[in-house]
Length: 355
Image 1 (cartoon, rainbow, N blue to C red):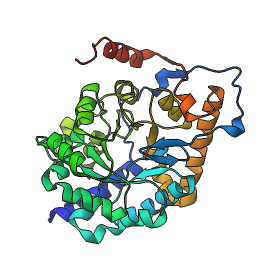
Image 2 (spheres, rainbow, N blue to C red; image 1 turned 180 degrees about the horizontal axis):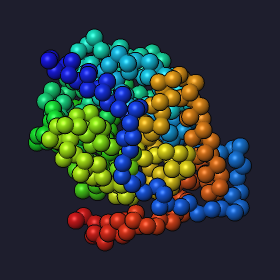
Image 3 (cartoon, rainbow, N blue to C red; image 1 turned 30 degrees about the vertical axis):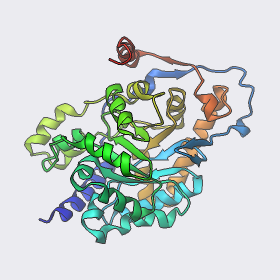
Image 4 (cartoon, rainbow, N blue to C red; image 1 turned 180 degrees about the vertical axis):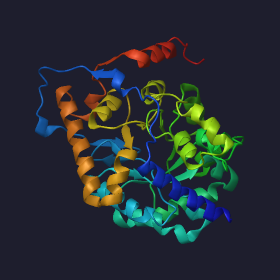
């Protein structure tokens, strides 16, 4: 079977599994975080300002529609509904991996529909780091041109690749490919993990390579190891993969490792406006959501908008009760961190800087 057909079929499988099966795994750490309540907030709930700047673009809210799908006919209406909601709320959106459309231009419309539905929104292109290494800057440029993107996400998903029967198991040369892209590309480059988190050490390598932002993609949301186990249950890799559904760095722990070193998007188990508020207090610039928006996006634009509106209202209440009128002031809100997350962060803070 031609590889472009294999890629598109795999995207369809992933979409079906994420909707029909329980695909979340691990512990994000958000339940271990408590925001300090402000009994006298000295601000008005009606005047909470959620606007934020990220990579020189202004967003009406820090909610970011994280990469989900594309590269299959079934994805076209989903991406249209997500993009229309992004346009309506003045927020950013990342598309799913564009590999399938780069291999088969007949699939481009599942991505180009995003810009058609969101002519003014901040849209992020998406390419795997292995494809970047193998095809170079040309594929990155084509991915951006396909959707008139303002930035490109380069995703790292080696946990998923290791479990996937047809996965890419050679990670050599990827950092050099990133360095070249950052040096030669004219748009911001964001590096995104897909569910296993970014460590302090990896973040240092990425900033040194010249990336513009990091999406930590931590443990606690969609587990692509679990997705691959469901997709190919009889494969040797899938049987092994069951032991790795809990592999990775919890989102809150990864955020504590990376926040303050550069622009950061927190994704991975963000499931409410309250989680978003906690992410902002811990140093995130934006908070990404994917799975909570997928089923609504399969229904209609209105269904997506209703969910986003609910999350936005929750965030405004959390900011109000924290005494934070703006996102900038939210970053100064004190937090308590308990449980396993506190234990893991304590281990991090014992490591001397620069080690």
